Length: 407
Image 1 (tube, rainbow, N blue to C red):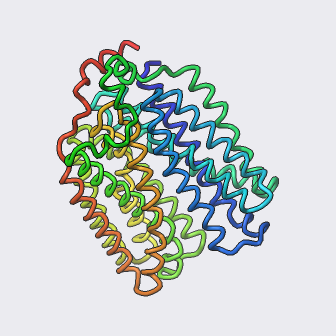
Image 2: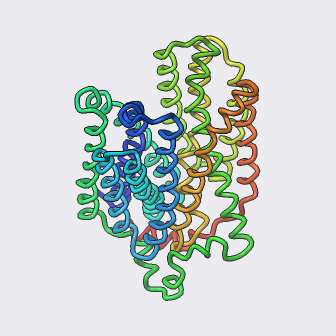
Image 3: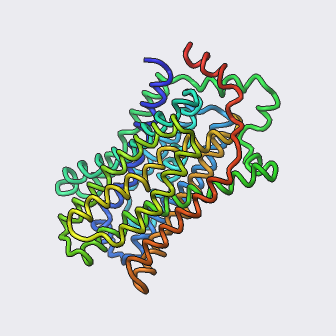
């Protein structure tokens, strides 16, 4: 198996395990609230602290991966979120859960960007879109895996047993460390003293006005991506139950159809990115997302709700596949992991607050206004996208391709 395929497999597995870990708390939340006698706000803080951990972990481990190597630090991030997950199963009070979920978030936040950086540095530009899409689908695999494990473990061993499964990634980290070599582009950069001095320096993301503008624009796009996804997936099932009279099983069917649309969208987006380029691919999907989300507020009937949900998922989350390649493209090797982790996890932290605003809109207005808000977000992201200049990270592409093929 060549190096390129190994990076994809390792990154897919890492994101799958991360997605599984994050979803465990969703499936176990009701049991945790009952055992510790928590109110909803206190329980919700568990997820908020996990997201905060992702932000800090993304920055810290992004810097470390640029300084000390992608593969080495990647394995440490996997070990850390495995440790945080397993410790959660041993918590005796909610304060300990807060601490352990923050630890798990640190590891999960670092893992995403490093895995995406590995893939970006291993694959040529004309294939990065599809490679990135293969990795991104891993998050959906994690959701499915978490659902299956929750159905089997929760009734028998309870929520603690579910989190003990989190120790499994330790085995994965060992396999990766043993079988995956370091990024050839990062190794080549170690020979240039000027690049070594800049490695992991977060100030390089704002080194000059153009770079600072690019960093801000990409952060806006990442925030909109997460805000749109969370706003849709958290609130729409309950909205549909009320407005369309769907049963719980009917809303579950909506969730499945939307998830299928998301997977199809991610795989399609990768192909379009490779054929038309990054900006055209994002432009098409952002415009289509704005239109689809707005029109979806007028969907009626079971068929309209299910098909419309799949279409919305296809465009709104299909773009998730491209962010690893997009951010990597705009930064040189010495700060690539720092940029990918910092920018995307900033989007996770800020975009994760979107359900609060959507909930406020729903309480004080209606579904059409809420969906219009999401449509406007995609328009803002579209403006940020067209403002981006040309990337500067691929000057070494020819030598990289030759080197990675030789490994």
